[in-house]
Length: 262
Image 1 (cartoon, rainbow, N blue to C red):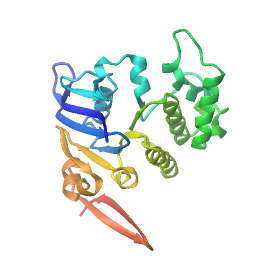
Image 2 (image 1 turned 180 degrees about the vertical axis):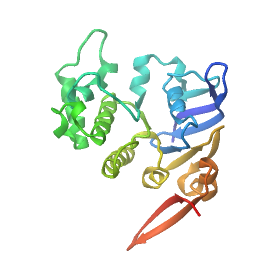
Image 3 (image 1 turned 30 degrees about the vertical axis):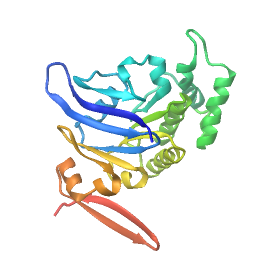
Image 4 (image 1 turned 90 degrees about the vertical axis):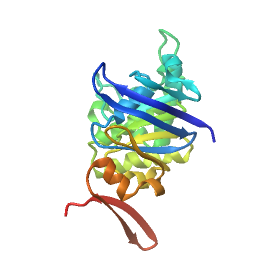
């Protein structure tokens, strides 16, 4: 299996200030779904911005398909890498279909507008995701979970090889979290390469194949979920005593973790 994303000895800091993280080494294989865990402020979104070439590393390198992200053109990078951030506000009341169709931008020539084929492509993606009923609704009038699904559809409209999800279930209620996680799981099952950050460690057992834990100074642990998701690693990552439990209902076994408040 080929390496899709490779991060080598990476460090980042703002200006001449303190280093956010350093000595980050991480490989994401083609078709892998990797969950990136860590406390608030440890630099997970910053790492995504470095992968997306929005921020520049202090040291090290980030490679996509063996090529340094700094050597990609804007359109070329957008065709390779899609990113769904946790928050987005539309300045105008576009319809959901128009927002999804914006994903075609990297494929358009300069000064050209989306055509009928682009619109049909966007609508087809919404159909596949089961959200075609949102096509004519104003993006500003739909729920938070529906907006996240529309943003995922927009990213798929780019036709990227890999997608970064930055806490896609943040601020969502229980049902909408389930909707978004189910969509991410389906994309992973189809072979899409995914890296997803989450505030909720329990999501890893639902969708991840591998996990990486980022602390305040660097990587704590990384590897297969069943090896890395331990009480010791979770406690070290979050700075609180964490307990792991197994719940059994009939033939189904569910694993979850919780902070120990005793």
